Image (cartoon, rainbow, N blue to C red; front, side):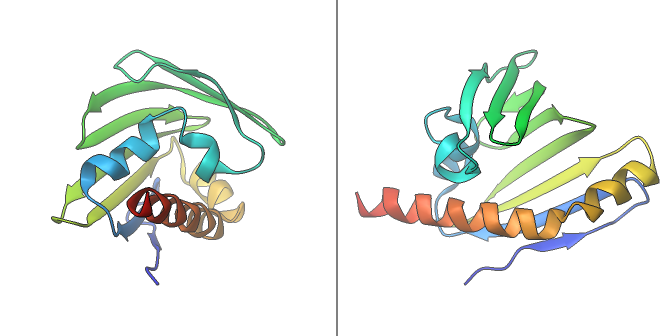
Amino acid sequence: MTTTEVTTPTDTEIRIERVFDAPRDRVFAVWTNPDLIPEWWGDNTVVEEMDVRAGGRWRFRTEYGVVDGEFHEVVPPERLVQTFQNHVQTLEFEDLGDRTRLVQTMSFESTEDRDTTMGYGVAQGAEAGFERVDALLAKQAAA
């Protein structure tokens, strides 16, 4: 079992790191293919909009409400920078051959915003979501 490491490297950042047992292009696709999003986001997610390019918008509807943002940078299959509610996320996909290290950095305007997000259970949420990503990647590999 792969574990998810969550740290707070600065007063305004959360860093999440995880290694997936799949090549980088497949892991990147899990984050950028609108057909795959509902399989790992859970919560009855519906992708209403997903324009994966710099300046493109994304919008998902879950049973808890709407989540949306804008892509600032898209460098397949290496990097995504996007807004996500009250912060900016940078996702870096490091090629490890048949594995991929994902480093997700969330940057907030204030320590209070960062701490509020940590209080929502970001570590548990990331672990649960990444376990669903693992299952999706395993299903794809078996197909």
